[in-house]
Length: 454
Image (cartoon, rainbow, N blue to C red; front, side):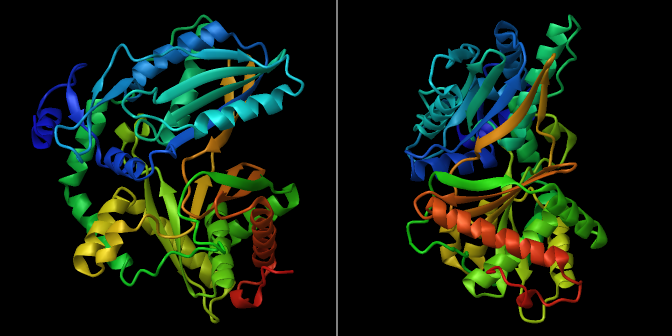
């Protein structure tokens, strides 16, 4: 069966457990990216820090139910007929779905031992044809404390899908623990998601999105890198981060309100100012990871859908604080309206139109990750807090903002091969200093007059 035949089968036939379907465009990008560096897994890793009397058998039952509801977590890749082509995929009812349980209470430092175990697990290479693509383990670190760990390859789930799966398992667990009926799932099937991708790519919206990005990416500059070495070419990362104190968080929130913006856009504006100063440029492009879930089906389903779009800002001698925040806020709005048009398509379009080297480009610039959602996970009477360990390999540098109400955390994540801990910590201190300067400045203050270096 050819790729076109499989696409036609998805469009024209009802969902079937034994239907072989092609990878979606998002999945294909992950497949080919993984082939470039098979030793560095493109996986999401997270854990929920749970306090309470967790029923491990009940959690296992809930997990088994949900991985079948989501469907995409029970797939097997089918090798391509021709070497070099992407594989296809099918439902596999026999795929392993057990949850493992480990007890670290006998270790001198149970929490450190559990974290070391998780760190080693998500960094291990993954064979996409023979290894488990999703792993779920509980690590007991105290009599009433557990780390519920999950690692999943990006070809199955993106960050949005992983968060949705976690919350659904918690919902099912809570219902079972209370002896209540579990609400039915509304998640789409594997065939639903691939068919929706095909529908978008043949739509007028696809063409409008293409035209938007063709205009926005004219004269795209080379990506900014702050590393002193050329080794910043991707790979596993290290993080310098922490919670922003309550007074500073409140000041950022007030500043965002005063400028009719959001906390995320304000942090992105400060990131653009920081990069402009550190790199000595006035044309800054950030990579913005987006969910690309632009309809109800995608928002209630799992799967790999996420994308990366550019946020571009001019930071020259005439740019005021108000100018910068206004421009970045507008960039966010435009990017989100056209977020489904894939990065790979943007680069392919540029290569055809003006820049043949663009097709090999792997990112726009340092990333701005926005995680503005509640980290609370309730499992019956137990309370958990979700913690992200890795979102996959990083090209150079990423600014990540987490927030929920009064809580604000800002991390800097850097490629481990290029950013030693001391360097990354120094960048974060300088960036937070500049962010504080921007938030405390009058709207007509020139951004160039605010310094990252104290």
